[in-house]
Image 1 (cartoon, rainbow, N blue to C red):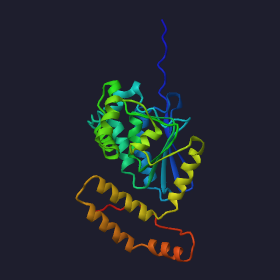
Image 2: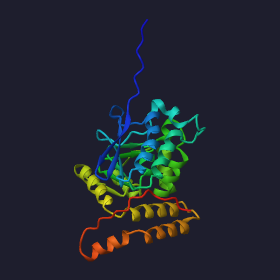
Image 3: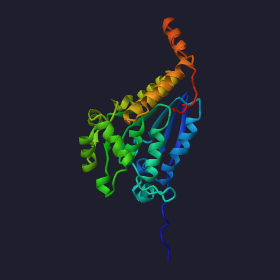
Image 4: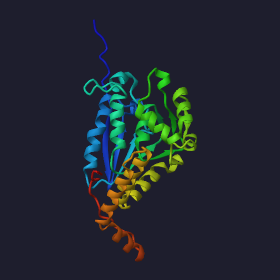
Length: 274
């Protein structure tokens, strides 16, 4: 008696480089870039490596084949949501990947086209800036499969779109368009599909020309303000001291007065604020 061999798990995350811009590519086109457990586990080591690379100033996250991601691979869902090694039950590997992306010190851009469904929104929501093609489609679907969305994803959605919108999206699992997501505060910008790739490339490279001291400091300060943390004044003061000790202001002011494009040189990893 013979049987059919189980289908091999496919998919991976890979990194592409273009100057100072690195791109994490979600590559599982057969399943519209759904992420299995192995793929979720790849986020942390990849992000650690990119954070430590001084040549990387901006990070883009995108999918292949015209889709951002269909979210967690349903066939691997329970293994994804529960991590027996750490004992984590609230989102497991999904939450670990989301938090690693949210804590990445450099600016992050979610480049969203096609489907952005379920757990894929946690990836997009963890990025600093979300830009979508006008043909993109969004849905957050835990109620359709009988699970509870991870707390980190719910919290981030409430902060971005408000509790009423979060309830609507999570309770219904309904699909919405990119313009609708933009109106709800989930996206920074929507661009025509025909201009999408060029817009992402131009925007990412433009961010890479800015002062990384300014960008990384501002990112950390805004995140602290959004979290209503008591450390905001200390974090701000720390970065003000870092600015005073750097050459970034002189570089920017000199270039402005001479009507030149500044070439900023600060590339240190984000120091720990105390």
